[in-house]
Amino acid sequence: MSVTESWQEFAASAAKQAGNLHTASVSERIRDIHQRIKERHPAIARIAVALYDPEMRRLKTFVASNDSGTPLTGYECCIDDVPSLLRIAESGETRILNDVGSAPLSDAEHSRWLKNEGYQSSLTVPIRRNEQLLGFLFFDAYERNVFTDGVVADLVLSGHLIGLIATQELSTVQMLVGGLRLASQFAHVRDLETGAHLDRMARYARLIAREIGPAHGQSDDYAEIVFLFSALHDIGKVGVPDRVLLKPGKLDDAEREEMRQHVVVGLEMAERIINDFGLSNLPNIQMLRNIVLAHHERMDGSGYPNGLVGDDIPLEARIVATADVFDALACKRSYKPAWTLADAFAEIARMSGSQLYAPTVQALFDRRDEVEAIYKRFQETPLKL
Ligand SMILES: [Fe+2]
Ligand SMILES: [Fe+2]
Image (tube, rainbow, N blue to C red; front, side):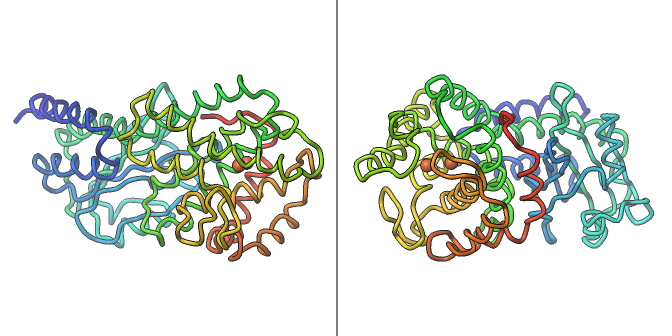
């Protein structure tokens, strides 16, 4: 089969895949594409996508399909520490390694992993959209000299579609979140939950999700969805009157009840959006409902609206609760001054286990350097989605 014919066949199957957006997860779709590619190139034992975060200049594992071996998950590094990938990012060219054993690879953990797993050939393709680097696509094989010119030509063509599919769900969610945030700004310019609070708490939530996700059976794409949806946790505050929302000092019982309604109003808003945009089959859309409704539930049952206890609280809501509380402590509110980061850490340690899910608190402690970097970086700037 010629490259053109195999490409046409692949494009047809990719078009079918694109139609599947609302039924299959990104991981499932990448696995499916991997099987199709192996029909043409049986030696390709692994396809993986890493995402690039331009703000922190970090590369993160995202989705992968492996024939065998130990998958590389939950891994991230700074792109500046991997000069070969930086070069690919800047030039937009592909990197072909047909003898990994003798290639001058970096000392980074993923290079060691590649060699330890016994991969002998590797092809790296940058994923770009509108001149922006979105990430990298990796094809790996256990044999040497797999990536001949013909194979590379075919895979590079396929690679652009794989990149598109891998980032498609995120783009849909990004558009949804961006639209909702804009709409809530128009309806709610008075909100004290500033853009900077959302910037920070969404990033703390992603950090926690990456740290504890694997132990909860979640793959790396889970953290990206948590990141995007967490910025919407308080959309329901649009329905809370100013006299309650902006009141300096403590709320009385009636006012507190009005404030608490924001989670139920938020869920109604989310349902409307899901219906209006036909998103009910989007993988992970349930996470939006869980985050909006349950981010004030507490581990000991003292939260609202349902007084859920422990594991009955969806994991993403436990993650967002910790990120939200931590940032609320560390920034100024109408009823309190900003606490120092050290005081905020001490307070979440106190709440750990009783109100906040202990592993989420531990995750912030374990990645304290990154927490501090996020805190310093995102001061009163709009969230870039
Ligand atoms: Fe809230
Ligand atoms: Fe918040």
